[in-house]
Image 1 (cartoon, one colour):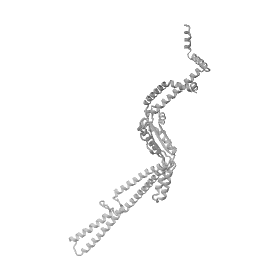
Image 2 (image 1 turned 30 degrees about the vertical axis):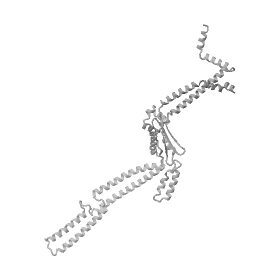
Image 3 (image 1 turned 90 degrees about the horizontal axis):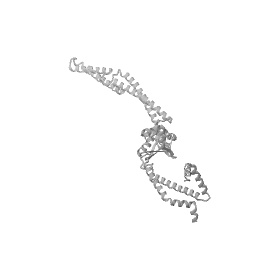
Image 4 (image 1 turned 180 degrees about the vertical axis):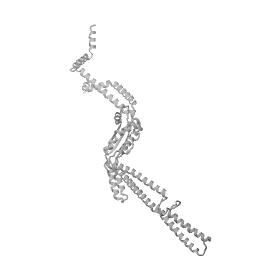
Length: 412
């Protein structure tokens, strides 16, 4: 058994390994030293990742829709809207659209310019920069409906910042893409609302101008107060005239009491005439101009109320369209934010040294096996002469000048 092992290829190979074990160890040591030095000179990279989700895009949102329907059935009519808000996530969203935006050229170009990555990449064109950026950044969709965004950069903070910017810029792009009827309606409602707001401001300015010019802040109340004042003045005037008629038979017209009552009657008459015609110093308009002022005020008020009603209606419609758009528009929500990594992702120095050392060890074993097999062929009686002749022929073909030089020196 021992004779068979010694004469077999395996035995000869093991013996050759034992004879060259020191050389193999030295080779592995040199390779390990060289690979460790090479690993120390490599540029370091860190990887940051974030997990995002599109509300309503995963299966768990179906349970929320059921809860929303149950809540809408239990709540009162005034609070039934809460149930519909809870079921907003049940609508099917275009996950492919979100993925295309996340990996779009627009988002990547904004990130490259935001972090000034062109000098670091050392590329001549933006197309080359996008290819290089695509090697460092990755976006993939899990079977559960989660988007995982990863980035490899030369610093911890930069990797995390780039991932967060990719998500932020993608949300901005999604907010500008018109993908639903609700969004188009919302944009139209915003335009109509701006026009209605301008119209309402014009009507309010006209009402303010009318109140400044006429002094009618509250026309109905001021008209009622004017009527009450005129009634009071007329009552006092009748009493004063009755008193004057009573004392006229017993007093002369030159007496002091008679003159006092006569002056009171004259003052009350002039006051009534002033109030009827309107006094600029009074907050109560004149009764002769009150119907025209009330007519103008009613026209202005109707115009103002109409425009206010239109504005409020458009404002309410805009809010409802925003809710509808929130149900249909895909947006990214961060579940696990990107934070600076503690450990670098490249280079893994220990792994690299072990891998290259093991590769050198296996290559040395393979080389010893090749040498052992070649020696076995040359030493064999049946195959040795043939292979030796092949080697001599090959040597003469490869080095003809050397063979002729040796042949010329033989006579000497």
